[in-house]
Amino acid sequence: MSARTLGLAVLLLGTAAGATAAQDPRLGRFDAQTRAAVMALLDSARAVGLPTEPLLDRALEGAAKSASRDQIVAATRRLAGHLARARAALGTKASLAELEAGAAALRAGADSAVLAALRRSRPRQSLTVPLAVLADLVTSGVPADTAAATVLALAPITSDDALIEFRRDVDRDIALGAPPAGAAMVRGGSIYDALNAEGPRVNPPPGPRKP
Amino acid sequence: MFEHEDEMLTRVVEHLKRPVGVDPALDGRVMAQIAAEPVRRPGTTAAAWHWLVTPRRFSLPPLAGLTAAAALAAFLVMRGPAAPASQTTAFQFVLVAPQASSVSLVGDFNDWDPSMSPMTATRQAGLWSAVLPLEPGRYRYAFLVDGVHWQSDPTAPRAGDDEFGVPSSVVTVGGT
Amino acid sequence: MGIDDVGMSDADLVRQVLAGDAAAYAGLVGRYRDRLGRYAVHMLGNREDAEEVLQDTFVRAYRSLARCDEPARFGAWIYGILVNRCRTAGARASRRRRLFVHDEQALEGPATTGQADRTELDELVRWALRRLPVDHREAFLLKYVEDLEYEEMARLLGVGVSALKMRVKRARDQLRIILQEAERV
Image (cartoon, each protein chain N blue to C red):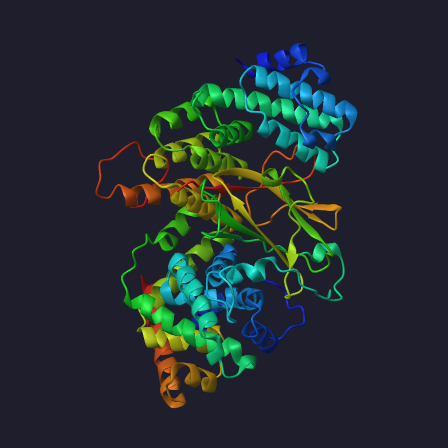
């Protein structure tokens, strides 16, 4: 289901508050109108098999930050769309954490095809951290294609801890004035070279390499 | 410092005196290791964690302005007393906010409820901390200072989508 | 960045930690992180090794804090630990990739003249320092970069003042020659 279709489905299929299951006490943190809108969104998401916890979290964030009903509904709907796209790319067996991280990556500007490629590159390992790193890199200013190529090259051959450290190193280089693309390519290239020093080569990340 | 003919040496020393940019998260890593050390006084098994969670009195120094809330927030990864059923990692969140009278850690992990995770002021005035067990995943969060001011974590990645006009940060917890 | 001085001296913080308030140690870490880190980076030549040594130094200092006889001189005392850790790390082959030296050049974007000059000088300084014997490099950094007095250096290195003055002088002479050679290339 495309994001737009889901959006229409949410509009058309919104149910009245009273028709849902027993009310979650957290919903009491919204005013009546916002609560009704949020519950409608949750019901629609549930109906198409999307997880509702991330949606409720986003709405609760809005409530905590005193956002308007329109802002809360827009943000929650946007997230629902990204979750749907993430599930389409990652598969129906994707975990909740993978879907959330995938949605964040899509929101940041990554392409669905990248998520699918990551799934193929790491079929049996969790993608939560690679997807989160991808989202963080793009948010930090690394161009989406560079971030994607780097993470795709590293994900199959590095641990989650190493990926988190890579992201931290890139952030630090950027904070010290390095251009984001260069920072990602150089850090990624060095890790790749070190890990492939003895093993078979797979597709390397883009960009300049160490001599 | 040097003779005239040592102008090059003077330039070298000036260059060497420049800040080198040590990772501010190093503070957190040090404190995490220290948290795992035996306590200096005899105590129970949980005593090693006692200093993280015990409320303490503190006095605010006469500093001006909430903007003095400096940016020291560290992530500490500690394998600690956690629920055995799922793989959780204890994270310590730290914020320096010398002017604050209360700081809450608020995020996806506690339903964005400011009352769930009030941060503890340590005896070192201005240093607030909280420890949460987190399962693998990516979490949005922010600090709520004095119940009014939202502050992102300056040393953590930004959430990117500040959909509500207020910035948030993200923390990613690995599974292995 | 570190925790700003909020009125607690090193001695106060040390006494608090020794009294059982481990959290107070964060104040000392924040206060000395950047300065000690600078020495470690220049001694070891790369930030990753330096940060590893720095972290180790702070933890060791915490463990042996009761042996800091003069809490008011915590700074000088922890320098002694750092110098020893740097010596050990320098003697050990590094297991990590040395990203810092080479990659800093690659990380420079479309450079202004100022940026390019700094990179070249940085490379030159690193290279020159690496060519000094370890004890000369130590003495030079502690004297001219960390601004320690000879008496303080003597206490933390366990070497006499006149021997230290000789090391510093030799370091200066060697650096002068190394830098003059570099200018001719």
